[in-house]
Length: 353
Image (cartoon, rainbow, N blue to C red; front, side, top):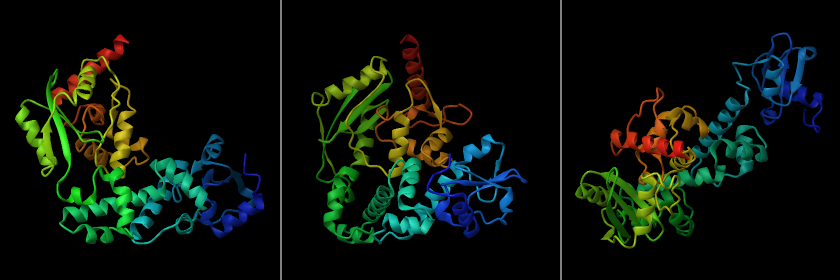
């Protein structure tokens, strides 16, 4: 079925104009070549008598048409192109208040259509993407030693009030605290024996901020202090007992799913990868490429690997379920033996269920 508010005459005129605003609303199939295209395809126009219109790429392919290699009209390629151009526009205008109307005009789609496609692929809205990129610039400026005032304007925040409204939810701390390595933060931690060696769990008042495994308690403490060098640290075995016990039950196969409050810093991309990891059923694995595809960025397998490697709350975010393309375990921050043991325990628990 084609949209009732467009006639074939309207569609053909859009094709003649190569109007990008109609991309994604229908495709043009040519009977003589058995190829279908976007309305905006730059190739030479076919004769009108040879053209059939379809609502989407899938309908055209069901009738035996092949996607044009020049304009890539199949849905995934079209959406990837729209998102790539939208992100590029936002990255090129970091200091501007970009509206959906601006974005739609830049990429040739209606604002509503653009919002739907972008969120479907990225999992977040264009506005959320722009905020995440602004936050990344802020963090980079702070790490390079800029003052908070200089950093907020360099990153594109119009005022300090806008920055401080968003910072606690996105950074897990205020910008000044982040710049100073967690200065002023209060972190409690505890260390317990586990089936995989020593387990360190650390948390702020907001939630768990660090989970690690190792052979020596001293090494685990040093790693925690390295991540938050200026924070106030206090060991408190009793206060964190409930969360530690939940993780230990998980390691023993008694609690397949961990749902603990988190207080971690992340870019928008890292969050999407970590959320994808949490959807993988216990005992199963996905390749880095499969995870990348699941978040709409099939060429970002290496970036997915980096997001797994920088996961500060292992076990809670199960990065051990990510493997290489050939099925081998790949890397794991806490050692491949632990990764193999985690997967073996999860499979054993699943078989018993």
